[in-house]
Image (cartoon, rainbow, N blue to C red; front, side):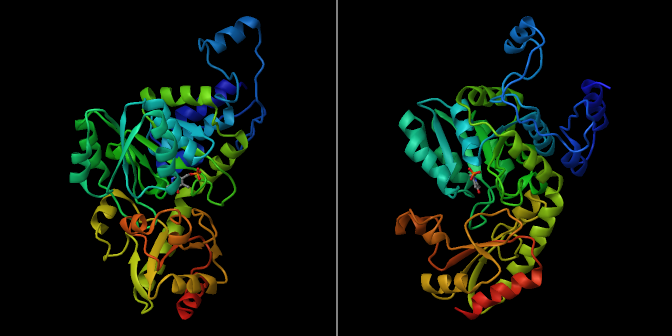
Length: 403
Ligand SMILES: *Cc1c(COP(=O)(O)O)cnc(C)c1O
């Protein structure tokens, strides 16, 4: 029973398989031991049968593992599974979500190229562009996420890449990905989407016309807040460049973390379903509370892009942000009154988290920049986990009582 026989059998049986089957089985390879759950390969290098075999594998003339900076069976299994789930030709795993973004820009852009970034992206994404990539001659401009006319107006002759996060954090703003992809392509630019908040279980940007999708696997793909990782997926033409960058620069995913993510993907859709159902309930309930001024959640009728969210996503995600009556002090009292929910800025965990964006994730911005980003001092963000819904509701009620 050779490895090839088992791998081939698994691959051919997955032709035409649906999302849930791919999430559990795509990319699986078995060693001659016949293990059922995927094996972890914690090895830095691989032995070759002969010197000629080594030469052929280094030259890429025959397939096979070479060195785990760029070829590892556990990492490859994760890459193949996420590619299947996103509908991508190829996926490339990275050491974190941030290194996934860095790999996209480093492999596809050069000094002198212009990149358009949506204004409401993850804080470190802005720092990566502002503090580092600009120093190497990449030009960067920021565009309001949902404003398609502003995107069209922002192009320059050297615009190479558009980078967006939809839905955005923490205010759940969206962009029409299909429309933006058309605009990008009309200008010979590529559209990359940070799909961290939806995961492929809720939104598949490549199928909407985006060229590249990336994730912080640290969040919902892990799902239990244990490990750092990222992934980039898209067409082989671009992924070849991303692989080349990783092979050379080395922000590679470890086999152990790849294994955690493989296991995470197997339960991703049912977890997301549970996260989203609880988030929807809590968002609707919060909207009724006298102490709450406004709730930001795309699953609410009151959300200005509710119809787009219904069209573009299969559910509305699990991050619920809301403004409470009063200012920063009231928001802090609300947060400090909770007893079950964790005070931390992470998300995508089984454990529900609560944070005050104005003094944490967006604390480094000036008051004016924060106002531009729509981050008010009375804004609270909750990333809804998988605890009992009544317990979460009671905990948030403690916060409301403390306002
Ligand atoms: C967390 C996060 C990142 C960065 O990912 P890391 O794994 O923390 O490096 C990028 N984008 C979004 C939307 C995130 O939430």
